[in-house]
Amino acid sequence: MKSRGYRILPVLLALGACQPTPPVAAPDAQASAIVPAAAQPAVSPDGVIDNSELQRLASQALQANRLYAPAGDNAVEFYLAARVRRPDDAAIRAALTEIQPYLLIATEQALERRDGAEAARLFELLRRLDPQAPALPRLQAGLTALPAAPEPAQATADTQARLPPQDISPQAGRSQGPAPTSAPVASAPAQVPRPTASETPNAAMASPPPAPALPPPEPARAAVASPVAAPARMATTSSSPRLLQDAQPRYPLPALRNRVEGEVELAFVIRPDGSVGDVRLTAARPQGVFDAAAVAVASRWRFEATGRAQSWQRTVRFRLPPQ
Image 1 (tube, one colour):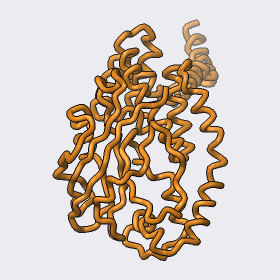
Image 2 (spheres, one colour):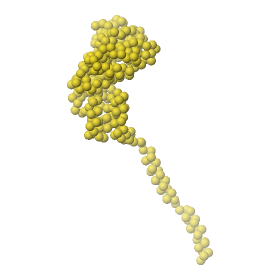
Image 3 (cartoon, helix red, strand yellow):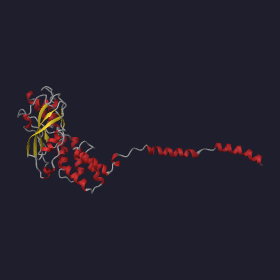
Image 4 (tube, one colour):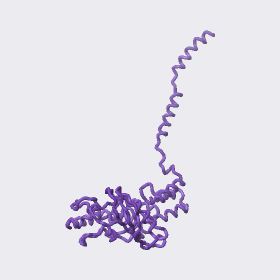
């Protein structure tokens, strides 16, 4: 009996070695199920950042004067995301209420510049901030009318083409720096929507029309600064530096609440690298209201580098949006 048991044992061992191995396959299947889970895309930043972090980023953007630009990194978008999570937070609502007038002014300026992409982006931010804002229908109509803009611009270009070369030299000098007055006519209409500063609500850099025969640019509303005679005190030459980077001054809250408008004239030096220094206030109307905001924004302007220092002047205007 004992010997029979020894004879059966090798047979059992051999059979055991030939058994399928599902227990091993099961962990492999389980592991293969885990791999796709590990490869899932990461959670979006909006899902990771908590509300306190959003408010911190919004405050930083506000202090840096990034009220609504650049896209994705500005105070409005951070506060809007925070409001979704805390709709009853009074501090968030107050911050958005304070920023709303600036956003409205910027949207109107984008429409004046015929910058459809930027105007649409700012309009959407304003709509999210206050879906019942009275200005929304008017701004929507302005966006809808933008495709018809090239026709008057082309008419202006045709008129400028018929003028003597000296009549358009300030425009050509601005658009192409030291280029001669025989610059292509295509550069002239590019300047038509740019009589106002590109990002500021009220700062304008303009050259005076050399002849009354030159057609005026786009009709400017009260909320947007239009060309004035202040820059005529500058030396207008073909080597005049071109404004490359504008910045938005903050409208002082006391003036905003009291609906006070005004302007500040600044004198400054454009350094060889295009940065601005030695900013001095030459005139202000009214005095002491907009001075600090105008001087502060001048340091963020950037002009085309000319390799030499130049004295320059600019008027910063503060205009309220129409009610």
